[in-house]
Image (cartoon, rainbow, N blue to C red; front, top):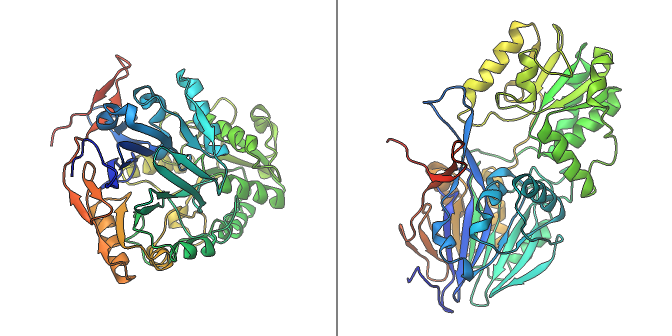
Length: 458
């Protein structure tokens, strides 16, 4: 395999980020002298030597494709999560090609670009569209996840085809957007798909993920039983969760409040794309302190204990618009991301020291959070629908990738290819060339405002 230049006989997959780790996704497909980029995200790393400094934003070193930017046919953003689009404002100048994505994700990307002074073409693609970028024919296949308009991609070059799942789950009632369409994916099984490049985040979890629609009852019960103010911490990009909280507030007869800049920004992007139109009328933030505690329900950023976020400021009693008191209730409707346990525990202790009740979704007997990634049964189902010749697990650590491969094998997929960032996957000949491309990480140095390589002592 000549990694420098794929020929018309080649169809390659080359991950620069997100394979062997969770986050920082940057994927390349190569054919006939051209490359296609799918996603360009960040990850957040703690700096143990700088306690209290917050997390450092890191991204895949794009050197391999930046040095070949003239061969880059385009960039596709599959959805609006930071680990899939967060690096675009920092790296786009090295690529200088159009970005293609759906309306909600486009709104989010353009807002980021405005903040960073980036003037890049971001082209709208509608669900179900087909797109020709160089030698790549891409069908956009709606798939359910925890942010709107997430799409899997069917990438076809004539010689072969690959289903790039992006992040996904099988949700029959996702609250926002269309439910998963089994017929769409069963139809792929009749087309002889060569490979599936597949999300592995929850591969080690048995069973099936929880539907977003199942959370309404649990959240309503907990909020109705709370005599004081209720603050729900959640991820700003989970627009379906925001809609559910709007529905809960409407039924519970509580005014809705929004605390946190990223929540306000995401709500604006969602409304511009046509979402959050019913039962979602937040009151002005400055008015929240004048409402009776029993009639308020607030959404807030900072469910991972981030310093400076709305929940942290509420815990420290330093929020400019609202003060919590004993008897109020904080609900963390989000999973604690591995590595953030200490910050979340500190946040909980601070609230509880002030006699403010805290309920963590992962510790509750009620359903208060739903993952956006497929568990083992969903992976098996997808492989049985699509019937690929090859399974390539990505978006996970080594144990997740291995378990995903085992599920694919048990579901009848003949070949499973395992690798990591920088490995070159030959999709037509079932081969992996290890360390074919140099990989690494970059971070934005706050002192010089330059992207610098990450160097850590082992």
